[in-house]
Length: 178
Image 1 (cartoon, helix red, strand yellow):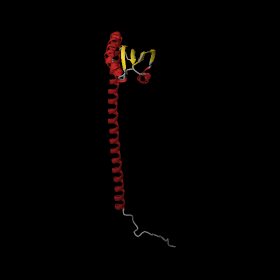
Image 2 (image 1 turned 45 degrees about the horizontal axis):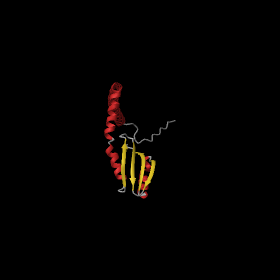
Image 3 (image 1 turned 135 degrees about the vertical axis):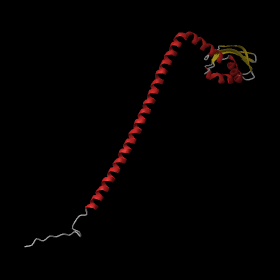
């Protein structure tokens, strides 16, 4: 008996050159993609290294600036300790100069109406200095208007007297300067 061989392929042999060419093409394509991937990884690593070195330089500069700031602060503290009383005296002089009594007089000029006359005035040249004054008013309406304007300034009325058509008042209040 004779063996039956079935061959469904159109050609019986595999073309070795075509197969080798296809395999070589696939191999070269995969090597090219691997090379591109390796180049990309190397580029990313270089970027990371540059960023790390820049961050390191910046953090080094920040640390150096912090050291310099601490050194300067200790120097300032030493000067403050050494010159503390002199600085306090200078600050008091500056405060007295900046809190001129002229600003207090300007305030009083704005508050008073024409019917009120100042007889005696004493004021302190301080930030929260009290003003003590004796004044006379021609009418109660003007006097109460003045009281209303001075009420927010811790107004204290020491005495009120009436003589004929005139009211005399002794009062004190605080003009707060910021």
